[in-house]
Length: 311
Ligand SMILES: Cc1cc2nc3c(=O)[nH]c(=O)nc-3n(C[C@H](O)[C@H](O)[C@H](O)COP(=O)(O)O)c2cc1C
Image (cartoon, rainbow, N blue to C red; front, side, top):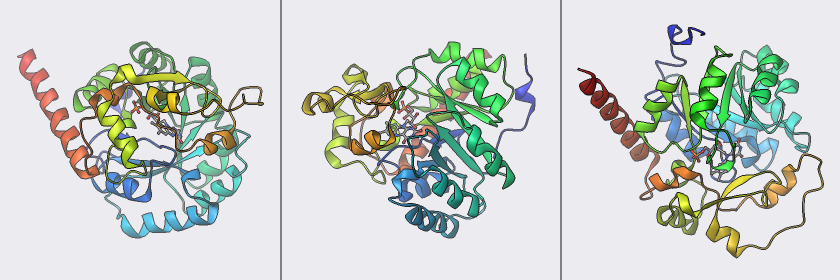
């Protein structure tokens, strides 16, 4: 069994919670990223949320100006699938800005790892199976984001308990658990399983800083996990979507690519109402500061309760 617990936690002096505000199409705005990073949570965003590589350049300059060295890292998320025509142009922007962490999604991180390692960046790859995890590690990924059943957006299907334990048995590097995490109790549980960090997506949709419209945010407050359905209607691969949105929107023609995913199709549906099972933990629309403070308080209480219980 790898002894990963013996390593110092990543960015320990800059994180108030072992968490990443997950990258979300349309939802992750510069304000959300800055709000999270200033409050001690890694702020991730898909590079395609900036309309062009030139706008991405502007965003990166803004992060450098508004965040100091003690803020948590900013983590651009790069869709590495071949259908993303902007991949290399966005990568060039990230290289110029010497980013410290990049999260890859939808495909093997192999083509981007070399250039990112050359500038000293860490590369975390999102994966949904052991085969994908092995492939990412072989390609040189420094960390893995495990997409599990019930995650928001393009989801995984593996059970989180089984997936973290199976990956931990073969990989000693940083593991991020994604899916179903809505509160401090779940963050602590993820650490107990062997994860180093967690993703929180859905909870950050219901913040004032997110790019979600009011009707979408209110739909999240009203929804429970019973209102979440799997569908490949948005990007061509299975994603978690609110039933109310699916019922109200016509089915587009099927994707043509062999593996189903098409970046253009995802972007054409960028306003879809996606949510994970963690939607049951959304009870109101908060500021990012309030949300993070609530998560920290829950996390500390859960940890104290456990210690108390073990005395
Ligand atoms: C509205 C929405 C958009 C998303 N867009 C992306 C994306 O562009 N890139 C990506 O890697 N993951 C995306 N995801 C997945 C999240 O990064 C994350 O894996 C997921 O939200 C975790 O599950 P949770 O919502 O239960 O916290 C998206 C999720 C949601 C809810």
